Length: 356
Image (cartoon, rainbow, N blue to C red; front, side, top):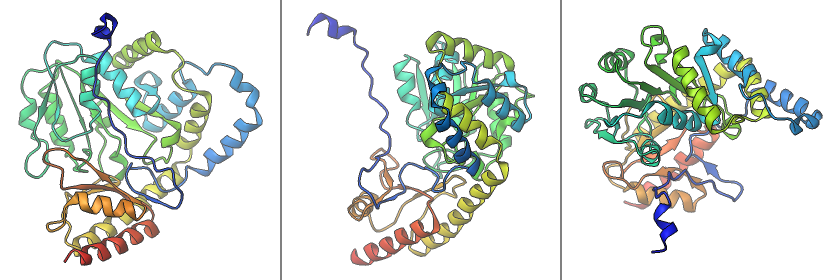
């Protein structure tokens, strides 16, 4: 081996959901919102295009306008909010900032698959705690000495929601480390751990504009926590890249926050479709945890998930399949529009009949 190759950092990268290039597909594999962003975002886009000369300037490194908008909306001080390029950027910064102990950090064995990638990248020891047979987090597993705790709520890819009292129980048993609650899907049925921030200075709550606010393409995420935690995050950010968020994202994100009525209307539409879709999937024999996210994690007793995944893909319908232990007979199905879900159900009905 050539000597310089020994110094290359080796990691197994995160594999994102497939982004099909062809047109006229039903895309239910990456948990994007099927509805457009707020009309106020469109209005702001027009203003940005009318002032393209401003793009020659660096953006505000503090993203102050967006931080202030989020803080006001959430009832927090601006020094309690940190923004980043999607919640992935925020979480990666949090791993880098807070998980520096020699003790392992804890997270579930079935969860967002970026966690172990970041841990490997930053050389953070970790211990995966197995979910129970119902894909529930076992809070007792998180009582042991560790270097930090992170988990999504609702969990991904299962959609299972942990009650707020159980989240607090985990935090209360881990007050000497940072606990991160990743709430990418909380707007679709959960209760945010934000209300615990005033009680626990070691809690960081992370949310995103990618799902409920229909802005995955703009890459906007944020964290809420004590002023001390947010300052630590910003110190690391400014040591890494001062200008992480571009000017259009700051402006469009602010416009989105200012249209609360549209945000709530869109979320309710997705929840309504999800509950209807659950009932229809049960009629076809599928089983799944009671998702409180914008997706279902479904399995059929007679037809392997991989076969359904491949057949759907051949029919230009994309869902997510994970070839991993314990979950290799499940499909993660994003909730699309009513029309998209009806087409998917029509495909499933036909395909399942053909397998008999």
